Picture 1 (cartoon, chains in turn purple, yellow):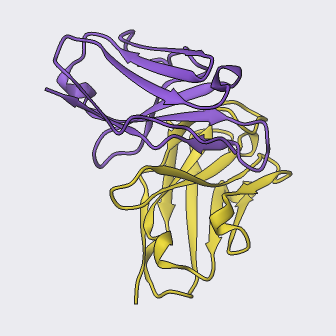
Picture 2 (cartoon, chains in turn purple, green; picture 1 turned 180 degrees about the vertical axis):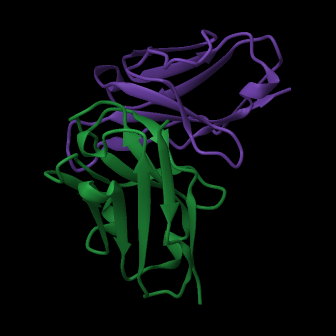
Picture 3 (tube, rainbow over the protein chains, first blue to last red; picture 1 turned 135 degrees about the horizontal axis):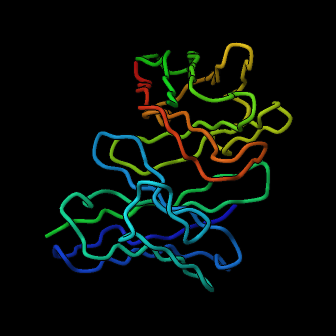
Length: 109
Length: 122
């Protein structure tokens, strides 16, 4: 199964841009999904299939995926974006269809 | 409206068993693959197990193989996780989650339960 590497933490000032990376061997050849988890809550899907946004997710959230790195970008960061963010790789191997990265804590300064 | 509600958690001694349930409503349960994801205290998400809409394919993370069994009852709109030979490292918040696409196994998880705490301790 895949090993996905995320930075433990990212700090960003309000109104600025936060970039959260997810590293993995040839991850650009896989589909990557991103989840936001606020404290005490269940995860919420914010980006799927690398760059698609579910309904209700602000356009400030965007994604990209190439080579060995997938990236979640949050533009014009707001205080409410403070949360943990997890990448997930879709794996066609039926034994492990949902591997998660270690998670990144986004702190809004 | 889609709802996923877990039940059956609690405090259990090492080596004992526990059965988690996830009751769903608001969608055609038998069209979707379902999963269990857990989160140890202060840690990240870990996929535990998944099952296709017709129970035709099932998967487990290596650390629970041979101890946990996932199943579903489409007539009862319910997902289950039978956990045997529990260990301290199984202590976590357990979420059930639905895949976003019908008849797939590996699409993103679009709906989650609120989570259920399982504590393994003597």
